[in-house]
Length: 505
Image (cartoon, one colour):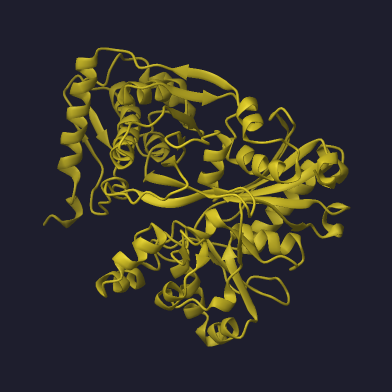
């Protein structure tokens, strides 16, 4: 144990895509206090998304101070864990700590031309073998290069190569600022999303750095996900607090859902859906359109734990389309009530491929469609079909995971703002397996807190973390198996119709 265990709560700094939050958890895993602030989204050109890193810092610092005050001051805080939007790239001045440009957000496609050149040059196999990832604009390494290229008139590349600048994903920037530059670190889960890390060695790869044109002098030390990195600058909160964990948001949610054994999996239902399954201490190379990634590492002596991941681009965003585009209801939470007014979708199938299809199809040219409309089709049928599409997309990825792992997933744990009763039941029906929803749905933040708490002895080990995770409800498959099979056939037929749509004359 360390001095950090004297506190009665652990803080999670949950830095998301649209807002920064801070949540305090007690020893029972219950939420004691929380605060949230949104920050500006910038769209300088079609397909490009940027954030002001200073706005992120201001929002995160303000929420942290608010929660620390609410729990009785810094003496109540045993440690801080950080979870963050993954793949968002930041470059800053080592002397001042201030960003030299806006951050390029994970959603941005601005690096797509560079990634296409790398693929055309035949580098895809090498990159996938080392990183577990395809060459894609989604990941953060090419974004670091982009920031340097855009700042060429200001000499950013020369400054980067000479060691004047530092870079990283958002957790790295926050740790730098929280420690006044004493710690330039990234955790292995975030580092594994850069296209720069050899995920077997957990080390930056010189050949990949050359391919991505990223100077090594920019990069942070790669550290475990659960470890005391440093203490906060005393003046920020009134006394130093250990910073004891960091993890990308989806890996943190997987940890918060206590998916500690191979085959255990979670799905987070938000704007999109992210499924991660623990694969143990060996990475699994997917042959079904999924990603291999580092899940976490507990201390420098602990093994690397890996996961296989599938991303669905549009789930909750389809509900927003029903709200804003079709104006079927005023608030997204009303969708389940509308969909529950009918027993089924009446043969209607919605494929919400608004920005193409993600895993396991990876078809950027697919487009959304509604099939099976008749004169009797209603708003209720369309709403239910949209929720059924969420479930069917989860099944698409789960079946790909089953195939890659060679055995069915060991259940599925669900969280996120989209995990309502009807959606969870539809997921259970589609998968024909049980689905668990936890009592505390803030699993991303809890995962970061749990990682930090383990590092300072606030919790004793994985068994205690698993024990305090409580299941609020378990959903078992129900309904006619023949009708569920027919629904699956309709879904696959509809997906086949929309694929490649944007390339049609």
